[in-house]
Length: 124
Image (cartoon, rainbow, N blue to C red; front, side, top):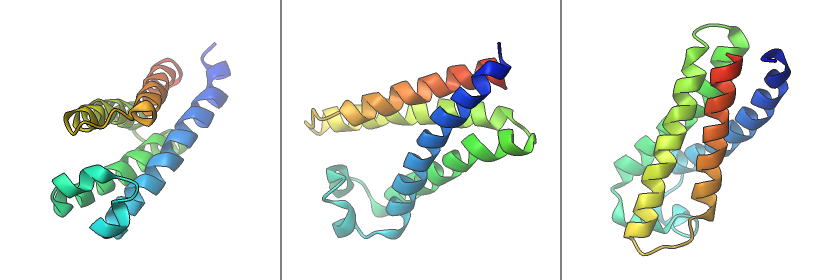
């Protein structure tokens, strides 16, 4: 059964990794003004923290793909998926605290990370 889940892992983890690679990369390179239209929360967050979140997202995206692909420390993929789930719980709390009720993307990413955790647990 676990080999049958390998393609599912690669599809779900690959999509999650692409999202965070893009989103994290944007946080690392764009200015506050460039991020504001997509992420209103940047006004209440110091830019070094925004940049750190971006770096963490990029590293997590790499962690979802590289360890299982190389077979070196594949447990890191599970850690990255758990980290993304925790990140989205925190992000949802930030949105709600700021009065932003548009959390559908956060919930979708949380559920996708949870599925990735399950797939990594069963397959890796």
